[in-house]
Image (cartoon, rainbow, N blue to C red; front, side, top):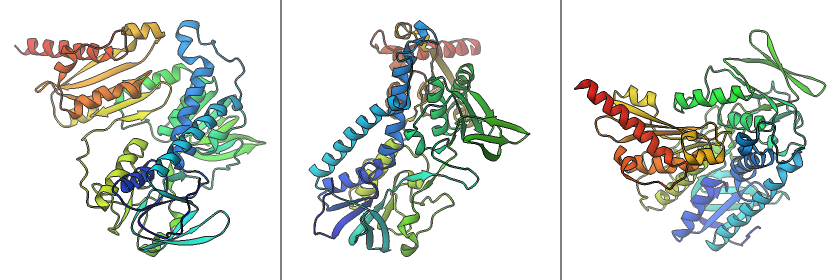
Length: 474
């Protein structure tokens, strides 16, 4: 849907309609401002909706359902809901989900009076952008304020022979036309780890290649150790500390040469080693904005202003943490600041969700961070198999780790691996940001049977350890 008007001057022009852009646009509209959203694709939603967050998480859910992954604890590793799973089976749910999300977003723009045009924007100067449509027509639009929310695109180095069939980037992977028997994945960041675990759940033989000697360093090391063990137990080969020297094709089959003389042969290669800001079409030179080597824009972390005060940048285009949830908040804060409305202070901690199989979610400080600050602490651990709900679901793995201050009892960090981790984490998030203590978990009742009971189990484990420490010191 394209809402075209004769107007060409707006209070704010938002370039990009992903999570950051849509929130900036809607917040501005709710403040009574005229808003134009420029979207380069044929439909609103940005990378998050079309090639990133929503498609990959839909793919994950489809794989877990069709493979019967969640029931294998009862029926064995060979159990499947659908015996012969094809690529078309994986994509059908994705298309339905995408169509629904686009309709919701279009309706949200419509009811808030946000104007949308489809085309590629480039700055003419600090007050104007040109927009070229797919048909080749060009229009010029003016605004007092701009929000850059163009997101990112896959990093595609020259030495990788991309062919969109057997050598793919992270945009290509959601449109595969066949399921390979083996897959090599270069890059063990969040995206690479998620796809490695998803295709492993399809019984694809996966090799994960990463030049660093560890993965997901921002997550508590005990959680990562458990996750790594699970991946290897499922047959995922993890080539950590391995630098890629060359990628060649034998026919259509990729061969990855890694340092030390080893090579990885696979039916399909996914290159997932980073993304770059999609800023090249914007002509940022015309407004005096520079980008870093990955095309990202530098901003004030409190206001999201660029070096040009009336031009803001939000979302993945500014770099870490590159989460849809935080991008939305950045868009809201930028819009409020642009129009002189002070937003409430952001919470100190927000959750990270990694939609691997199994899920990983974390909020607050890791054990290494707590120790590094010199805080006296104790940890509590709960295994999901210790809960009645875990037994009912046939869960064999999964854990929760909570870190408490010995002095104050405050919850400092919560880290979860396993089924429903990204949902469960919000209890820990609330307690941390409300400066709650271990007493909350000890004194409150949780629904039974639920996985959330793990909070009480982990808190009791930590309390027992604290009591032992106190007795030992007495």
